[in-house]
Image 1 (cartoon, rainbow, N blue to C red):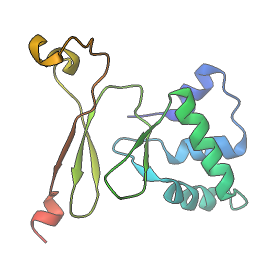
Image 2 (cartoon, rainbow, N blue to C red; image 1 turned 90 degrees about the vertical axis):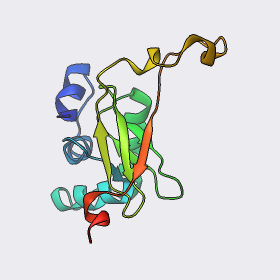
Image 3 (cartoon, rainbow, N blue to C red; image 1 turned 120 degrees about the horizontal axis):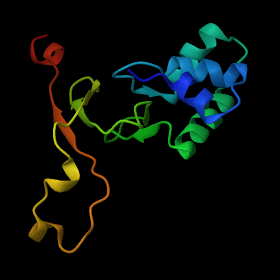
Image 4 (cartoon, one colour; image 1 turned 90 degrees about the horizontal axis):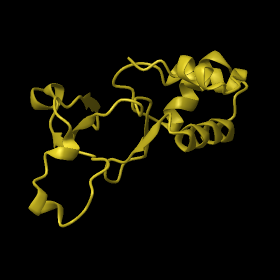
Length: 138
């Protein structure tokens, strides 16, 4: 499970009330919220938090490498707090649900050398698309 507030404390990142609330909202497994969803949930804990503040904190966390942006076609960007742990995504093409999938092998080594065309692979991003159980069996 992602414990973003703990990771930020370990890095020495000053946790203001606003930063703490955003980090708490983003804590957990399979968390992939839009900025608006983060703001809505953060507002429940800290009503005075502004939308611009949430966006700024999200941008700071992306720049720190503590969260990453996940784009799902034409839908709003989502924020993934599990940036510290290599994983892929399952995305439902029906409802947009995103789930983390943890590889059992190093995906940077699974592409055969001839197919790399001379590239040195440093990271991979694999996205599986399909229908979740809810959309498959409505």
